[in-house]
Image (tube, rainbow, N blue to C red):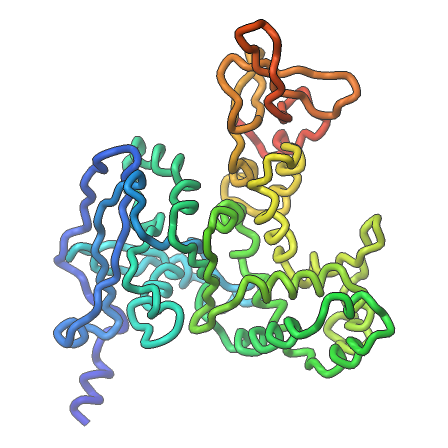
Length: 408
């Protein structure tokens, strides 16, 4: 009984009053980054509090090819929009952890990830826990000059990471059903889905409405709509997707996206699953059914962006239109998040443009009759010009997406 009473009186979270706030040392070089290791708790730590989280930060140099994981996540509320009314203020609260034996505040979603990482007894998180992590919230200090160059090399950080861990947030009562449905969908061949008279109808009919709602809730999480996620997962050598205690496979999500976006199964869904009957049928010019834009959230757009952002052959204005499908706290970030392998520049007339990464100061931007987008041209020693690539320039290009992004 005494043990029960002691546990009942124990505070929900550790009390770090009296401990100093964590202080960072300046990074040694411009290719240095901080990484952190989650420390295992000993019996004395658990006596202090079972939810205690201890991390230790160290410095590494990207030029020396260190081994680390990089975390991709949202700072704010991780839940689907329909679930955000419950305990609305909790995601805005900060939670304390011990960093180098000093106190540091983190957001609720990051706290949940660190708690999962530190307490995992099995599964993917336990397997990767020994390797240090790069997490922007903990590894970049608030000093403006350092923050500037650290943000500038974030694409390199994600590209060099051993793996990128996509943290969708904590699980809820619907995630189990959503994961179960993903497992069923991966067994449906795509060539069957496009046939309206195939036996896929029987498959769809047997899936409860609640399972479709659960999948919709999972795919509507803010993670799939955040612009910077595109760059983070596009850089990944290996992508590990975690939601609470569940590990999701990227191939399963891609297969699910293809089924939900491209097939005539939507007609069958409206017949057999009442949850879809209230969804207006949107058809694209090519005849494809687009209801996934309502039901599936941003999954299809995210998968398209993952394969598009690093492709130098994709026209710049198409990257901007792609970015418009995502959210960012600062509107122009929807633009910058699409900029992998591209660089920004200003013309002599002061126009903002985006061109190939190989473009240089002094290159010329040409408008050529019959072409929708300007071309970047480089003058060589002989006086001739070498073609560098396509450009997007505000004021010279038909697609003026960035102008609507409130650039100042």
